[in-house]
Amino acid sequence: MPPIDLNAYLARIAYAGPREPTIAALTALHTAHVVAVPFENLDILLGRGIDLDLGVLERKLVTERRGGYCFEQNTMFRAALEGLGFRVTSLAARVQVGATAVRPRTHMLLLVDVEGEAWLADVGFGGDGPVLPLPLVEGRESWLGRFGHRLRREGEAWVVEGNSAGTWGDLYMFTLEPQHPADFVMANHFTSTFPASPFVNNLTVQRSWPEGRLILRNRDLMLREGGVTTSEVIRDPDHLLEVLRERFGLAFPTGTRFARPEFLRRSYRSHRRVRPHRAAISSIGSPRVPCCIAESRSVRTSPRLTAASPVLSAPVPPCCDPSCLAPITADNAPAVAIARRPP
Image 1 (tube, rainbow, N blue to C red):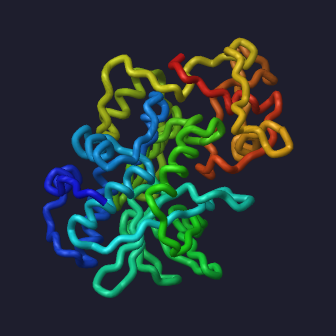
Image 2: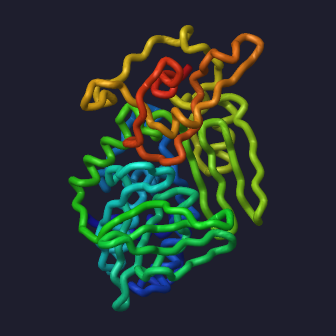
């Protein structure tokens, strides 16, 4: 992997500690990156796509002080760790949150060999992900404030579990098979372009720090801190830009508009007709949509809409995985409508 400007990267994450490849340095670097660089999918909703070229990532995450999702963040973190002398292997995982069937490997993480031990590093899973690296040891719990993580073995696979509300739940499953850049090019393309992908259909920005989490999903902003959860609804596109700037440190020009979320309530009939993409057709020819959308879809009403009138704003799938599919019907079709231009 080509070198990056380490001084610029370390300044970006506000890290001024030791640079020797030690467990202590890995822990401090991992924490600093997670705190400084938000998890976000905004370029997808601006129609820009996601480029995993390291030079592009360095400009985006370091120079422009943006965030990114797993493929971007863990690619950058691997380059930084290798520049500091760490031995790093890239791995791929299947997201397990809300899973009812086997999913493809659409998450990137890292395995770091340091001081004779193996450690899991993952700075790109968002608000439910670990702030600290995890030792590759089954059952050893890692707690930071009210947020806990641990690993569980399932045959040849490992499962990362998370705990933020008093109970443990599976986050993702992985094996120790090394992955190559070409593997992530394919997974990234699928995740960022597949019509039913949650990252295509929903806006999400997330920040993590030792004491809390700040999570924006479409119009819903949620703060979890000190055992208390507070929420706020984004009023309009200008309010969204203000929240991105003030709460997440992401500045966009005045007037920037994202393909999601929808701020105007429109009935499905009044919206322009959107045909399902070919890639959303199953092997038996039935159009499909993430089942987590179909199952959790809520119908909203207003003086202008009847209770039977579906609207375009669908809840974010809990699984964050584009492979969870259920048949498209007249009721859930709005959930897969893709607006390429702002409303």
